[in-house]
Length: 442
Image (tube, rainbow, N blue to C red):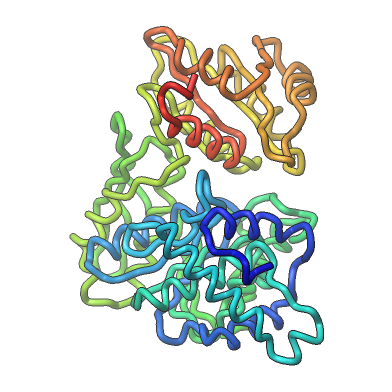
């Protein structure tokens, strides 16, 4: 079947079908296939990013600064919002359909000639592995100097952790998510994330929860990694503007340096700070303070408190910590009219805790819910019933996201602010809706 695939659409369909016939591979088999591909990563400087929230944003900040410095960089992130090609980017440009298909063909070709130890186990990459392998091949062909890898789920057993030689590791904030795989406590989850650490390699992380920091530091001691904590007091002088936030960050040898993030999302201050500290660890003379400042300021990350229309904000917050950070930003934004929320979520998230947090915040005058088209979608009646358990504020169920968006976002009154949150899948569906030809949108 693989040999018969010769179009981009067919390649995407095949990858989407992988979960139906294969499961997660062992990290050992992932490493063996990487060796079979000849993509060890040794020809690149690898920055590996793990954590619960903020991974994608940190990767995007790093990407932006490397571009500003004129340094070639490949970035592998997940999930995508609209197209799979978003998961692999080089120097600010996602893979074209032709490049995607070429990378698919390369991996498919290697699958057709498996070494004996993989062939005997009928090895086949998982959905995530297949895209990871394609990205590494894409980066090899592009000849990038740096590669920024975002873990998918966890860290220790994540496919991206098959890469042994790393230049730098970053662990973002740790929270409760994917607990069925990672553990029931924050230290257990942190230990899984810290499985990406390597001896002699710096690890940059925020000091937010004492038990998490202690766990990361213990894991670093066992691995022989070098700890680079970002303390709360390292960030000060936060000034919220209309569409930007200014802050000062303490850096070794430089005292406090001013930075600007081009977003209203308060949580991006910490993500930007982690990226800046990571970049200074590289000791690359091309990464001057003015270059880093400009790269941080120019970064725009889709689906993270993104203003997609005037006074309409799209945010991918999807777990309890992400929702709390989202709500903090909503509180910080003035609104002369009514605040409205369009919400949806997948059923395997802690949706009851998330909805309770939103409802009890009292921030929204009106809530609209609609089911996602994804097979993991929480049913519409459950969405509506759960909101009604916690709030007396109006909650309206819509038959489709298209109808909900048209009513809440396109027909808002002057002074109203509309927020869309609850899932990256929701962010993707809204982005796809906006990219349709105008006659087909609403």
